[in-house]
Length: 376
Image (tube, rainbow, N blue to C red; front, side, top):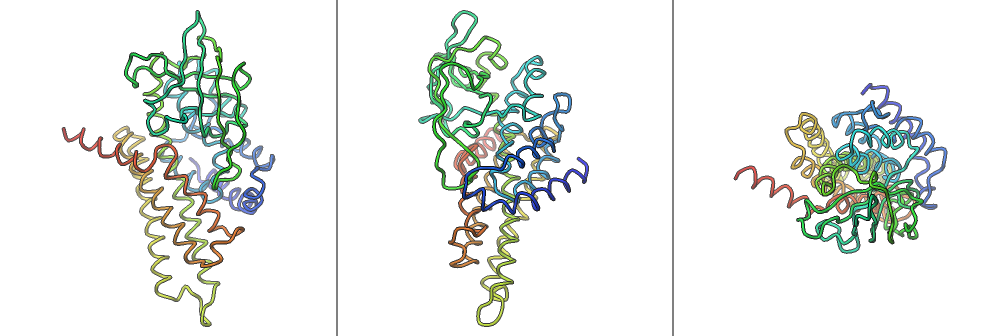
C-alpha cells in the first residue's frame, strides 16, 4: 500500500469526518457526501482482491489503514466494515469462483451494502444453538428464522444468512450460508436498535418467514457455513483490534490536550504526577496493542497463525482501549461526563468492541483451546 493512500485516508478522517462527530452522534446518521466519498476512495473494498474490484490489501496493510479509520467515530468504519470484513470474507472464504466473480465487485464498489446475519436471540457466542432453518424444496431453499443485532440491516442490499440445513450433523457440518436479497419475499427488517454508542452505525433484527431463494444462493457447499463463519470472524477480529488501536490513539491525544490546557492551582494538570501516571498507562496500552496487531497481521499474512493471534489481538486491544477510555474520562473530570466531549462519546463507543465478533470471554476460550491443542 502506498503511503499516499494512508495520507489520503488520514487527511479525510481528520479534516472531514472528525468535525462531524457531534452531528453524527446527535442525529444517528451519516451525511450522504461522506458515504459517497468513502466509495470513491475504494473504502468499501480495500480487503477484497484486485481481481474482484477491490484494493487487495494484505493484513499488514489493512491494519495500518484501519489504525487511521479508528481515529474517528467507529460508525465511519462501520459504513463499509462488513463489506471488507465478515460479509466480504464469507464470500471470499466460502464462495465458488463464479459467485466471487458475480458478487464481490458489487461489494467492493459499494453498489451492495452487505450484512452478516449470524447472531440470533438465543445464539450469539454459540452459533451451535442456531435455530434458523433452511429446507430444500426442489431446486430452491426455504429459510425461516430470526436474526438479531445485524449491522447495516436497515440499509443492506444483501444478507449473508446462516441457517441450519441439517439437524443431525454436528454444528460444524450442519450450518450453511445463503445470499438473500433485501427484496426477497418474507424478509422483514425491524426498527433500528437504540444503542449505548456508535450512533450512525445502524443495527436491527432481521426476520425470515418462509423466504425462498434459488439453489444458486447457497454460498459454497452445503454444511460449510460454520467453518466459513469462523474463518471470516478470525479476520474480522484482527480488523477490530486495529480499530481499537486507532481509537486508543485518539483518546490519548484528547487526554493529553486536555491535561495541558486544563489548569488547577495555576498550572496545567499535566504536571500532576497522578495525571501523568494515567497518561503513561494509556500510552503504554496503545503502543502494546499496536505492536501486537502488527505482529499478528504479519503472521496472518504468512499463514503461520490465523486463529489464536487474531483472538489475542482482539482480546487485548479491545480491553486496552476500554482502559484508555476510562482514564480519558477520569482525566477530563466532570467535563468527561458531558455530552459533546470526545472522551465521553468514545467511552460509550468503544464498549462494544469487547462484545461483538466474539466477546472477550470467547477470545479467552479460543486462545486457551488453541494452546492446549498445540501442546497435545
